[in-house]
Image 1 (cartoon, rainbow, N blue to C red):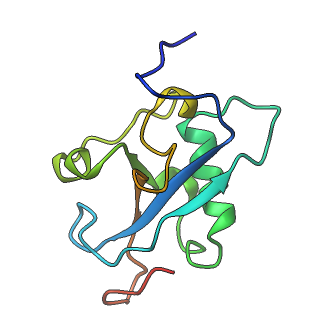
Image 2 (image 1 turned 120 degrees about the vertical axis):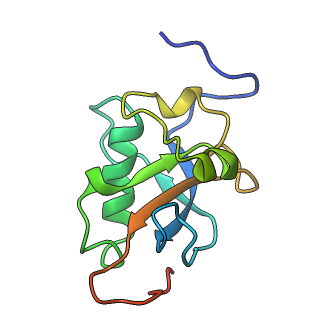
Length: 120
């Protein structure tokens, strides 16, 4: 089992902020922090599963993208550096996302033909 970051807890949710990729690095419109709950208790709660849960939770905002197009970042610095979390990283071992004040950053591609479509 992966080692947890200091302060991380077992949980079935993650706080996230959605951010449109208007410039390829997520500097577009952002949403407020939202808690996304784990939908399928029969699969490991890793970044891949979280992406699928985010896609479901924020439909129709994300109806133009596939879950694999979402990129999840632990913090703003990693977002700016373009270093997303690996898909097999377990959500429970990541300190970010455990609290509303420290959400995971999730970027999604801009809808074709839109200019700065607002996130909700």
